[in-house]
Image (cartoon, rainbow, N blue to C red; front, side, top):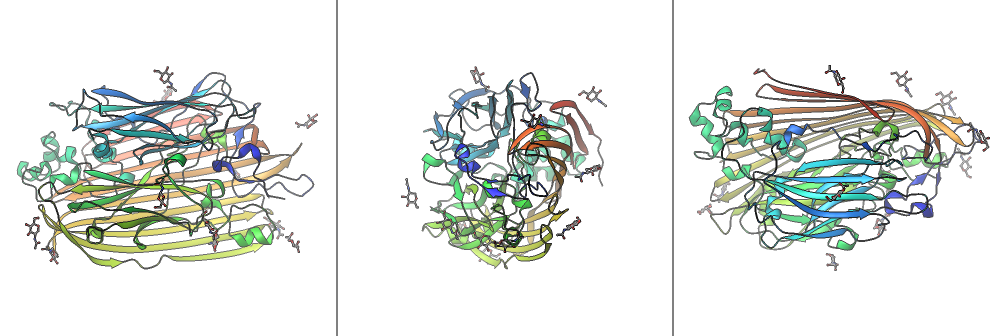
Length: 640
Ligand SMILES: *[C@@H]1O[C@H](CO)[C@@H](O)[C@H](O)[C@H]1NC(C)=O
Ligand SMILES: *[C@@H]1O[C@H](CO)[C@@H](O)[C@H](O)[C@H]1NC(C)=O
Ligand SMILES: *[C@@H]1O[C@H](CO)[C@@H](O)[C@H](O)[C@H]1NC(C)=O
Ligand SMILES: *[C@@H]1O[C@H](CO)[C@@H](O)[C@H](O)[C@H]1NC(C)=O
Ligand SMILES: *[C@@H]1O[C@H](CO)[C@@H](O)[C@H](O)[C@H]1NC(C)=O
Ligand SMILES: *[C@@H]1O[C@H](CO)[C@@H](O)[C@H](O)[C@H]1NC(C)=O
Ligand SMILES: *[C@@H]1O[C@H](CO)[C@@H](O)[C@H](O)[C@H]1NC(C)=O
Ligand SMILES: *[C@@H]1O[C@H](CO)[C@@H](O)[C@H](O)[C@H]1NC(C)=O
Ligand SMILES: *[C@@H]1O[C@H](CO)[C@@H](O)[C@H](O)[C@H]1NC(C)=O
Ligand SMILES: *[C@@H]1O[C@H](CO)[C@@H](O)[C@H](O)[C@H]1NC(C)=O
Ligand SMILES: CC(=O)N[C@H]1CO[C@H](CO)[C@@H](O)[C@@H]1O
């Protein structure tokens, strides 16, 4: 058994300086490194026709179904040999025919590629603020194509600026004799004006909370449409009298209507070196990146939205063994540092929040046959994570510059991370006053256990964190106190048996954020609870085969579960999403190329909300073909 680290000239891109596990047939076994990425060899079984890939992570109905009021082509680029080159750019100006304010704005990305290629990471920015983090499918000779539509209404502050801006997209790719796939990309923006008469019928069109998807919503964004004036009948169903329903329209609201709108200003917390993309490249745990910012004196609410992806030795961080295992066995892989990572933010060096990222698996990961043509959860639209920083406005509002920092606990090379600071400004006053009242951020508790004998080993990690922040902001809206409670629970097991030939990865992360907005010390005006759970299970066995190849059999199951509960006086909105994928199959691998194999993937998607509306979708794929795609909706009114 051998794992070699061998950055080859072929795979120069940073995205690819990965540990190579070559197998030496003279040794007993062919254990590949912890977890690997692969590509299809030319002789791999692939579809004969151009094939559409999909990421059925969110139901289409969450996006507007009507035609856009204006559609603006933003950027068109062929990403060929782009490694080490600056991002593609294009000028942006708001569409003349569709002036702000917009009801919704949707980013529409389409990509086509044919040939041989690894998966690649990509992002789209507007003036250094990230709008989308995405990755690519691995092409075939006959070609692959896909489309990503993402609601970007929350970036309206950037999109509506009269002076426009610069859009950019980075996708580092390598094209040579072996890797021939060029990614052809179109990005356009669809603008939807507010409709005088909301389209009757499908309730499902009115789930803006999902539009501000819960992983984008660890902040209090009450569901205006469900409770709003356009749906008085729903307000009644919810047991709200019409005057109570008014709380949601803002007319008599104690909670400011502004809380429901996209931010007034967005400050990118990103690299100022546009030549290498706007993301920070984090190489290790001490490589914390900063952006010096100064915020307007009348900001009354702040939410930091973090984008993150992990690459090279940390692409499969959740499956990395501890360094001791690697050293004791003289392995040359650099995929170590254990299986826990946390991305955290600081203000002037002080911890202000953290997340454990959802493990997005790129299309070449684990077994690429699993992700054809249904990609892994979030691979085309990686989730972003929100930290409510409103309690910290007391620190930021002194008119001086402050350093916002981002780092990765236990991280190894490399992570691509940046953030957007969403700020809401008081339109009635040129300044507000604020103060941090309570700050409780004890260190994360981590326990690690290792038992190993040669290549057999069991490594467990348990981690927990609780933090509590509270601060008031006095603005023309009132003197409101925001409490943010955060809890993290993390468990992981990475196990090797059969002399390292069988590997098991079990991970479970639970993140819970509670936000309360109070007037005075007691009167709660609104509260929200946002829960995320992501369990992951991977079991794989490896057997050496002829001609320096190995055969790997893998079972995988992963889930992204999100629950949001928002209470506004007596109004209550709730929704939950459970997105699950199960896959199993085998592949024959030589070096990093998949020569043959067979795999099946089942995806189930479930959505429920407080109105009794539910939606489920079930997609099955086998050996690269979509076998079925069924969805059902029901809108029975039931209150548990
Ligand atoms: C991009 O847009 C052009 C012009 O409409 C079209 O010809 C091309 O096929 C599009 N490419 C993709 C990948 O959608
Ligand atoms: C980017 O920021 C760093 C640190 O804040 C600074 O040293 C550097 O000069 C800046 N580079 C550009 C191109 O503005
Ligand atoms: C961490 O990464 C930074 C940036 O690449 C580098 O300067 C530093 O030496 C690294 N530190 C360690 C401990 O590897
Ligand atoms: C690792 O290498 C050291 C020094 O070469 C050697 O003493 C040791 O036996 C090796 N361990 C294993 C498990 O091969
Ligand atoms: C709170 O803010 C309001 C509106 O800006 C202002 O009129 C009032 O004086 C402030 N209260 C205090 C105690 O500063
Ligand atoms: C490793 O575990 C396997 C069973 O999974 C056992 O057969 C083998 O002897 C163990 N190897 C060592 C070196 O302990
Ligand atoms: C705002 O409320 C907090 C607690 O309720 C209080 O301590 C603070 O003095 C108030 N601020 C202003 C400006 O009134
Ligand atoms: C995968 O699951 C199947 C059936 O659930 C089981 O027979 C097989 O042993 C599993 N494979 C691995 C590598 O655990
Ligand atoms: C192994 O390689 C030899 C020589 O290239 C070839 O004849 C043989 O068919 C190969 N075996 C398999 C199973 O591919
Ligand atoms: C599910 O979808 C497949 C095709 O995608 C169709 O043939 C089948 O009838 C559907 N099954 C149900 C229960 O709707
Ligand atoms: C938990 C762990 O193994 N942490 C290590 C990660 O890597 C750095 C070096 O980059 C070590 O200093 C840590 O001890």
